[in-house]
Length: 241
Image 1 (cartoon, rainbow, N blue to C red):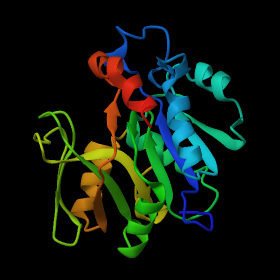
Image 2: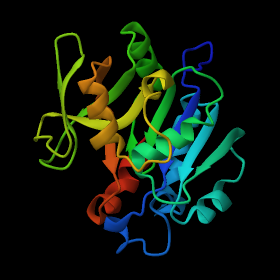
Image 3: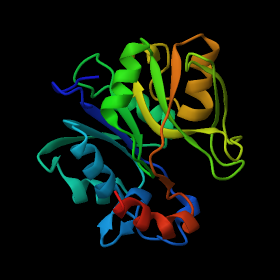
Image 4: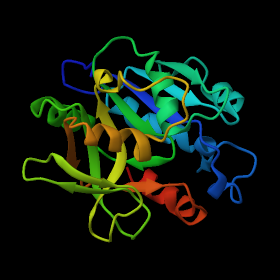
């Protein structure tokens, strides 16, 4: 990952192209990342946090209602350049990631974020964790408060991930928090333009191939605004930051 002298994150890709079907009843006329929280888009709160963490460039993977996202953020945010990888047809989180990676400035590791989750991970800690383990993929993990919603993750004694099961996290078990440090070289064998899920297709395939995938347990606050009940309480969680 490109970093400043303090080891803070450099380039961040944000996956912001989904249809947001589960949230449509609460936010019918906006793409999910623009869902308002205290008068500002969710995506602005997310980008604020990562600007403060030292991100020096954003690449937004956009598709559904992308014109509204582009109009809201333009070519820079708080002085940080913003670029867009546009999905003309839906590519899923994996296909959108692969397309956005074509805009990375170099072959260094980068930060990947979900445009509908907020997790107060310390970027410098995750970067250090990634570098010390010579990882190809590093996942941030939280303890799930509900069963059957998030990706379950099992760790070995050395923090290497031994199992991934999408949608099978148990209460109190480790779950994928949607903040990653990734090495571009790990994805060279995936074809561009193919609809893929990052969680259900790419990560499991990399794991089966023996890629160096590690998980860092984090105690930060986590919220996924994908369903109306969590969206309703998101502002309190985010504004406590």
